Amino acid sequence: MKISSVLSVCLFGIFAINSHGIIIRHDVAPGEYAVRSSEFPQVFFLEQRGNSKICGATLISAHWALTAAHCVSETLLGSTIEKGEEFQVEISNSERNIDLIIIHPDFVSQHVPEVDLALLHFGEEVNFPKPIPVNTESNELGEIITLVGWGYFGLGTVGRQYDDGSKRRAQNRVTRADQQLRTVFDDPRISGRETLPLEGTLGLGDSGGPAFLEYSEGLVIAGVSVGEVEGTEFSEESQGQYGSVAVFERLSIHAEWINSVINSDY
Image 1 (spheres, rainbow, N blue to C red):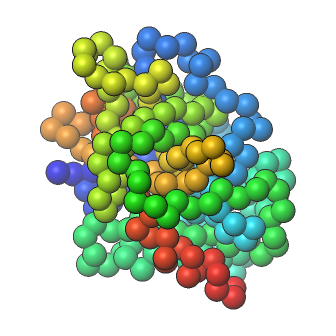
Image 2 (image 1 turned 180 degrees about the vertical axis):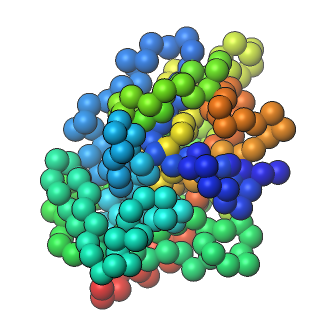
């Protein structure tokens, strides 16, 4: 089985999904998925090229954000830091500078599958918005997650269609939780499926973006989007159709590594 990253970079079995995009149900008005720019302020994109917003990240502490490791090379982030310069992003309408990248040691290694995670360090403390904590509980299976993204929009009947740079969110249910989390984009026309009212999946450009679990106390980030499983009928042009399987790094099994980094003296 192969997985694709909608970044058009082939990771280990994944089709990476680079800039943000959300594919939605064909029978629900697109406006139902739209969110204001002020919603989910902890989620930001790494780079903008025209309308396209390339790769997402989420603020998880006052000095750190979390993204997919392959986003480092798919944007100017990696080359900028390599030159000893800071990389500027916008979080909740404020400019912030990234000065350090820590990539998971199992991203480029003999580890199978690769762990596609990177932590981004801010030289100055980010006082607002309030960071979203990382999920540490192995409770994801069967839970509903919320995806947030910009960019390529599409319908489940046809897959991705166009990139309008609009911010959207969708929901899906975790159907597999082992080394990674997976969700299936259910077709509401098929009886017996538990299709959610705002069911959706990742689109072209969603790498690095969050998968949130919501509790009465607030949100936690349970996953980082890294791609889509390449089935026998997979096509980049029809990516995101009903039946597609989205893949996320499972943060609960990497919480120890994340905490060891963000609690270090950088």
